[in-house]
Image (cartoon, rainbow, N blue to C red; front, side, top):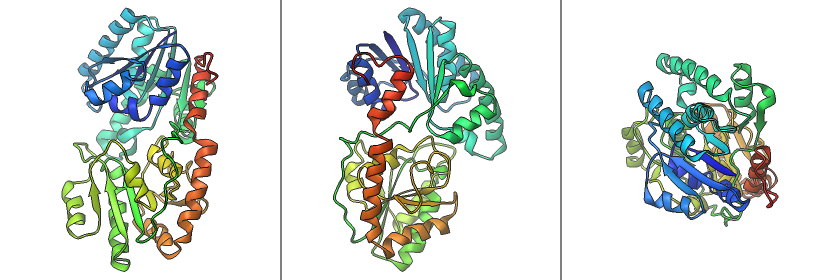
Length: 375
């Protein structure tokens, strides 16, 4: 079969979907991946999987309807030219407009994955609340033409079915994007000094402000403890002002590590992984931390709470509660034996639940694309 995979940025095809793309190729399918951008380092890696890459124009975060209609028209033309048997989309605009384009072009089998609700749904500002209302309507249109819709956590699935965006019988719950357990191997722990790491875009809804506040409080009591932020700081409505991060750096509270293609060295140098996010699909960085044997402190929030059993492989804290976050992080300073114990348990959970091969098997079997590999 000919399969088109639609994404909103090329990097995600490499970091989040490479095993799925490779599995589809191994099952004997012709696979075309579409995303905006032609950055050679990512495009070449997609092509190395045996996948054809097709760049498309998409304003991922913009709200200009003319731009979105242009994307819709481009995809209709592309689908009519290529005549794929299956279209699989993830992230908001590819799901909405890609699904509609596929139906208009007569693609027989359409599937989507909801990987999270994003800033429009998380923000309480009036403008974003209005955007979320519009997005619900668009999701209702796009998902109506899907055979099945994959969800990465039960909270998002309940919201979408409760809002009437997709019937419950057409939903499939999967364990996030999974994690490659061979790539993210157990790494020796460095316990002295304790190192706390957060990986992600420097956004408010990733809990960066709470991490900074917790680090500030703990650094006063435990000056040897280290607190590290890793990830890009970009132009986004929810970005933490760089002046705030620079202030923490200047005061010696946090260390800032720029975005990297391989987070394993940073994770190996850390003892505890922290992600105080307000909401996720399923946080891939948490799965990577678990696979490498790191305990996790995260929030009792959709997507995050599924990854941690409180007191077993880490701790859950309330959303936007810097004091509770600091107390949970302090437990590892006062009881360093918890780091190895909980980290080991995290690896076991990753093997049991989040192995990318198991996750992709559910996706491929649901779409009828397992082929002869049995994936």
